[in-house]
Length: 171
Image 1 (cartoon, rainbow, N blue to C red):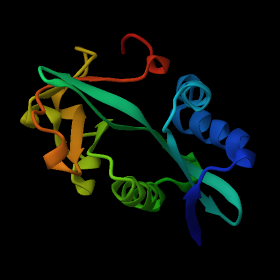
Image 2 (cartoon, rainbow, N blue to C red):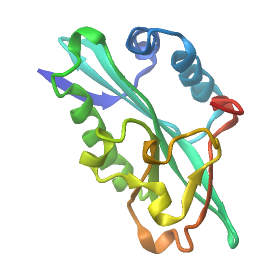
Image 3 (cartoon, rainbow, N blue to C red):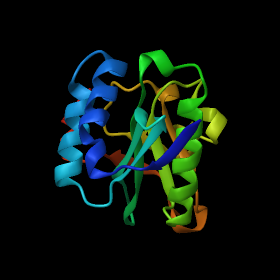
């Protein structure tokens, strides 16, 4: 049985482990730690099985800078599932649960830099369809996506999405 819930303080070490093992490096785990310490309004969720953290997703503040100003939203990622628990629907359940909470919290949009065949199942579309682009020019167009949750709050939308400085200057 998989349980999805908000991160607790006693999950931090397990979340680091999930990210390190899933990505086979420490960069994502380091970003999660930096965001936890420095970013307000992060939303962090875990998937557990028999009390063990097997998946994690983090949402952190982003902004779209446009002619009329700035519109705040969230960036999804990193999202990770332990290698031994992948391809079992845990990531899907984790994202669906988290997005329901993001909607309930009245965020206007979520962006993701991810696999173009995975994230459309949640309603994400290429951000460029809405005139939105990523701050990192090297990001492929089809890998940078947006999910509009409240279109009325995000007009005009055309602009550049800026991530928190914890993500670094470039990819």
